[in-house]
Amino acid sequence: MQNSSLAPEAAAPVHYRIRPLNPAAHQFEVTCVVACPDPEGQRFSLPAWIPGSYMIRDFARNILSFDASTGEGPVSSCKLDKQTWQCDPVEGPLSVTCRVYAWDLSVRAAHLDTSHGFFNGTSVFLRVEGSDEQACTVEILPPEGEAYADWKLATSLPRADGTEEWQFGLYQASNYDELIDHPVETGCFETISFEAGGTRHELVLTGEYRTDRQRLAEDLTRICEAQIEFFGAPAPFSRYLFLTMVTGDGYGGLEHRSSTSLLCSRKTLPAPGALEVSADYRNFLGLCSHEYFHSWNVKRIQPAVFRPFELDAECYTKLLWVFEGFTSYYDDLFLVRTGLITTESYLELVGQTVTRVLRGAGRKLQSVAESSFDAWSRFYKQDENASNAIVSYYAKGALLALCLDLHIRQETAHQKSLDDVMALLWRDYGQPGRGVGENEMPEVIERATGVECASMIHDWSEGTGDLPLAGLLEVNGVRLTMRSADGIRDQGGKPSASRQTTRSPVSLGVVAEGKDGFVRLVVVRTGSPAECGGLAAGDLLIALDGMRVTAEGLDELLSRYQPGDVVRCHAMRHDEMREFRVELTLGEESTAFLDLVEPDAVTRWLGPKAARERASG
Ligand code: ZN
Image (tube, rainbow, N blue to C red; front, side, top):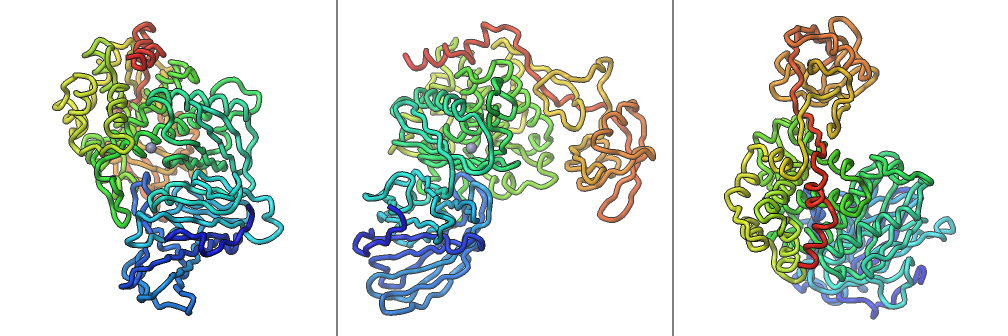
């Protein structure tokens, strides 16, 4: 069905209609019709945030106009706060029409131009206060004009009778929570279909790219099948969409109950004819695996405080180390378990995560539980001091999951693992069940595995000490080695690439990037030579001892110095040239890599055997 117009009697208690008003001006027109408005005066609001992305975004700031009416004529309204409107009392159907500005090319909001339209319900669909549990229908229309005749529509929102697959027309949701959990992509996208665990899946690709469709379908099938088997078939959805926007350098993903919105760089898609898994493609597969795992862990197994979501304001939980951290552990683990990447490639990823965590002094100030609680104002609002001040509940949470998995395996002679914890969470807290209490994880782990770990979990999640990674890895046949960084681009995960083995290089203790032919200091680490010498984040490093500095040449320049040497640094701060004297020290050994020492031991942890034992037990 294309461009239909609905008979009013077809509408549910709440009916929406959305159409691109003017793609070139990035505006949607959204109408909401309430059959029986509140006799005291109907209130409408828009969420302040979107579930899965824990930051107040004030989506209502993009509402350009708000006009209420009945069949009798216009209805007066007033605004009660930044995101709430109140209409005067009326009888009979009340209609509100808004124009919504949509120019945010991310997975979190809405984006419209002449090439495509994308929206999350949180950006466009007004909440009818008091009617959250009412069923609703939504008519989705294409832009007007011949130029848009080929546009199609992709969403996991259920279709109403009469609407064909991939077509504009009438869709429906059983409540507001469902309405806003199915993003919609429209335009001339390409689809790649595959079946996994008896369920239809589609990869929807928007943008400019050249890739190997067959390979994408095969590789995603392996990830999806493995995860469905992990939690137990059938999948908790009847169909799943990977809505993917391909751009030059985008990256992001947001989980939903039957779909995910992804933003990826075109270089991360596999090139036609390529056989290896490049580091870029590994990132894309990891992103898909991460968002898909969320279909269970956070969309259905949830913190109790998320049931229901408070969408007007922050919704605090200490548990994102479970919902994001455990998901970050399993995303790459599924790549190695399914054989998409080698054990060595997996260990490289773990080494990079260890490096990210250990390079930040913020881990000594903030626990993962605090990082989770403060996600709204700190993790999601990172500035130049973030790595000195906070720890990531993703990265350290993933390492916590790794330690917990290895600890459970050690305590139970590999009879139990973190997989059993996930299985119990799914059985007792997934589906209609109940949310996970803020302090309930130790008990959940003990119930699932018999391993008592309350004080250990308390130390790991609420404490700021480093996790006992090296010892736990060693028991499982893997050696963790620390070294100093090879230069400003070294992400860790591999042995040193430099042939210089006699001593570690000196370091300024900064994160830096090339800028206008010079070096911009992005982060100045706490206690580093740069900080002690007076350099600050944002400074543009011009010269060391009178020699020009470039991003490419900085490491070579520093390699000529010894620990204890004092170097004269010229830097621009704002528009002023400053001079600093920096005493160089040995680079901190905070770059990690892992080697496989005993392949047999590692197979018990990473190999397919572990998964099979769990499934049969
Ligand atoms: Zn996530």
